[in-house]
Amino acid sequence: MPNLKVRYVGLDVHKDSIVIAVAEEGRGEPWEVGTFPSDWASLDKTLRRLAAGFVLKLCYEAGPTGFELHRRLVEAGYDNQVVAPSLIPTKPGDRVKTDRRDAANLARCHRSGNLTAVYVPDPDTEALRDLERAREAAKNAERTAKQQLGKFLLRQGRRWDGGKNWTLKHLDWIRRQVFEHEAHRRVLRDYLKALEDATERVNRLTDDIAELIAESALAPLVTSLQAMRGVATISSAVIAAELGDLRRFKSAAGFMKFVGLIPSESSTGPRIRRGPITKTGNRRVRRILVEAAWHYLRPPAMSRALRLRNANASDAVRKIAWKAQKRLHRKFRHLIYDKGKPSQVAVIAVARELAGFVWAIGREDRLTA
Image 1 (cartoon, rainbow, N blue to C red):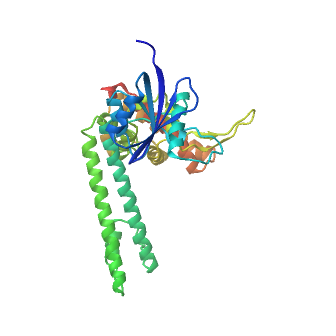
Image 2 (tube, rainbow, N blue to C red):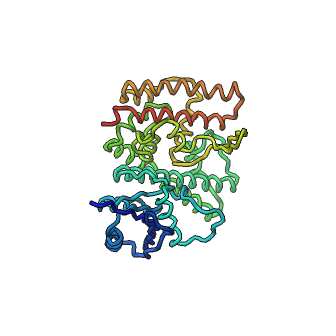
């Protein structure tokens, strides 16, 4: 069979249309094929026409249309990549952006090898990711409901001095508030109803995650991650669903870079200048790691809940988790008390090392089954 030339195909994918451009191997600028309806039959027909006498290498940007198109392309035998939009090279000063130009730029960059592919989860993992993101949205709605209710009470001079907010005692106090105007009474009822509905939704989705994650292929990873201090059911489910197989990261440093916990840098010649963390990659996992890192400010200890979670983990995972407790606590204290770093700076450094321990647990052979 003769060696076939390669056609690099850029797909600018939208809800109702797909713009296709092609850059051929060994030729000049990409050329536009056209704009087609966003349906599989039309796209497949066009791609088969383009593949006559050529090998096709396709790509499109990750976006709101998700990964369904990628899966259809792969099932049909096409070589396709879903690429990171933020890492697509652009010309400085180019202020003209159209769908045709985007498709042509994708084809050009794919031909030159300047695109970065994103991780495409399997359908089961993606379904669990949607579930934990739905809980995150519900949690944000609950937080908004609390803020609106709290501000309403503050505007009316109702201040709570009985301890922590949003406890059962605090909510009972809110329900006992009496207002002179009927409008205020109705506002209070509406805010309370919104908060109760939001809390019920959070609790329902939390139970759903706990139930479904235990039946999924991610269950071993979730169980092992919970051996770590500060990583319980929801935290481990978020890490597992967002990242999938941690073995795809070649090193701990690569994983730290992926979650955006390494310092930014602008160095030239003898000058070395490092700045804040890059905050690239998955922000949800980064947030979970930072929240978990605060737990290591306390001395190493095994609470009853943590012992129960460790009972389900392997010996190797338990050793990693205990090593993390001792090392991260020492680092936290060293940064705050010996070096005088602000706690907000110290916690980021601890979260970065915590990411390394999470990676080590994800690399355990037991999880390959």
